[in-house]
Image (tube, rainbow, N blue to C red; front, side, top):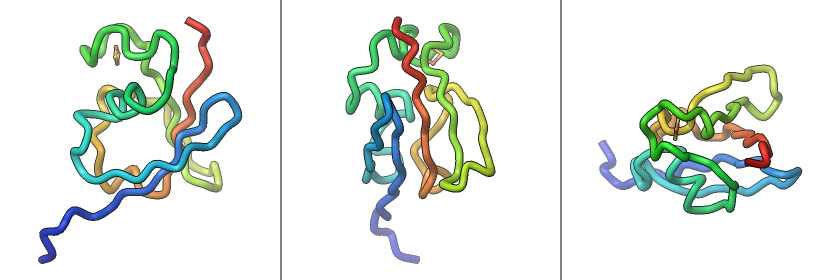
Amino acid sequence: MNMEEATIIFSLHFKNEDHIIRTYQNEYYSLMTLISAILPVSGFGLCCGMGSCGTCLVEISNKERSYKKPVLACSIAINDQLANMVVLIPDSGY
Ligand code: FES
């Protein structure tokens, strides 16, 4: 088995812009910490991943949008399950 870190590529969709993300497994603690590090989403992740504030709610879908799932980004690990997915970040205006 190849022990090299495989690149995980997916996109973040925020304010009508797509941001292509190249990362690897566990580079960030969670999808919430990745988003907070990359995009200035006001009020995002207010409870720092405790799962209680709901400000990190995103929608994960495949590129065809035939699959959609709302999730708390702080509960999502960075792994292969994100590969080729689209993460929609609502502009909540907190
Ligand atoms: S950061 Fe508060 S629920 Fe995810």
